[in-house]
Image (cartoon, rainbow, N blue to C red; front, side, top):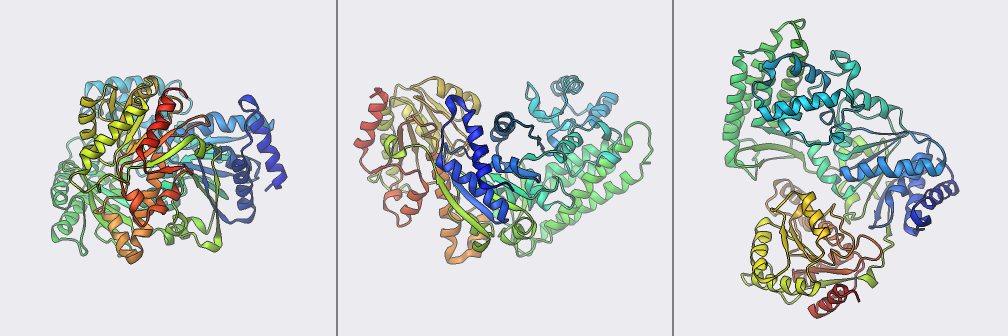
Length: 627
């Protein structure tokens, strides 16, 4: 690892290449040095880096200067694109030397040339695909002839799920390059080879967690991993370390079996098993499954596994050297069947350290299993082997504790933000409103929201904790106000954000998916309204199990950190650049009255605070009038 002086010099070099000669940010430099120290000492690091810090360059500089390969894992495609299309090339240019970097995604993100060849050679495979997707497959085939990567992200159109699924494979069903006739030209394998030769490999956090818990490594060996947007790591680990059983998996396996055995009795039985599974799971939807499992689910799992084994017997009866592409289809179907059989076995043998429940919709319920606590799991697979840097603009206050990071093995720092929140913003809490559970709350909150929007002249992003609350507010305020009010239901997210940013006096009403990843700097946004404190659902089965495990500490360790992080994410939509100004308004009086209120306040940027609406209106009018 290079000396701190060399790291500082490299950071200065890259910042100097930015527009206008760049901006020197103390928080960025402090983070950069802390990452270098962590890599040198092998101690894990948790970094809270507020909006505008420039955290990606702060961790990329020491990664690039180090000798060993490193991995950056991030939860959003936007940040991945920024890293590989902007930050890493900029860093290479500033250092005056090549920087080898690569993006690696899960196999289903790459077009499978073997499946494409099979579809083009055998119309029977396309019998269940509608005419629209068939046209898309032809378009994808043309694209496959000139793309270097086969990465879905490079497409200039969005293929339907049916078309893309027909030409892609998951990691659990892919036989690997050595056993696939198209292995030598495989796009996913080429991406892996590029990653093996890279100094920095950029992946999504989901793939990184799959790598941790996979029997065969999915990523090259590395000494350091940076997990950006680490506030979501707990949920991603829970997802990837668990499993999900749905009727759709049986339907998909049936299709794969029929691609090998046209008149397959086993395929019919698989589809029947999928229907029976949906029926058996329906009464338990949104509920934890008891231990031991109910008799009907036990019987269903035994029956379903028998159907999968029957399909495997039928597949084994097909010669490996059958004509055409039957052999590769057979191998993929067997791998898919094997994975389903393994998950069925695990589902009926869930341990006390796991929670089982049913999620999904009425027509597509899912049997889920996830670990209750993650500390021991991550210690075994990550903390003991790789130096980890966890960073985000909104770090949960107890992230290290929840993830099993021992206090003696990691450092935690907050490098702040370069934005002047005290001069440019205001946090307003409507202390006078009734409690959210009161029948008087909703009309009073609508009145409050209308007054704030009038003062702001539109320019409002209103964030709601439920669709019902969003719909009702949009319905009421569209009748009262002359401003354009867009609802999340109106248009796709990119178009909504485009219109909201372009139409200065418009408003956007949205739910949880807009609480993060929304970037609307400038005059189109001067008011962010949050209807209620965003506590997690009390009946979430996984969180219920964690609450039981933590006992009296449950609110502190489960509910309060999640609410504080979500609140900070929502408030973070307001100030996106140095000259932004505005108000964050919380229409939940608990923010001003509850005993835990200071934990929530401390998670937010350091805005001045008020419980007087007229103070918020004065600031909003001054911004509206350009004062």
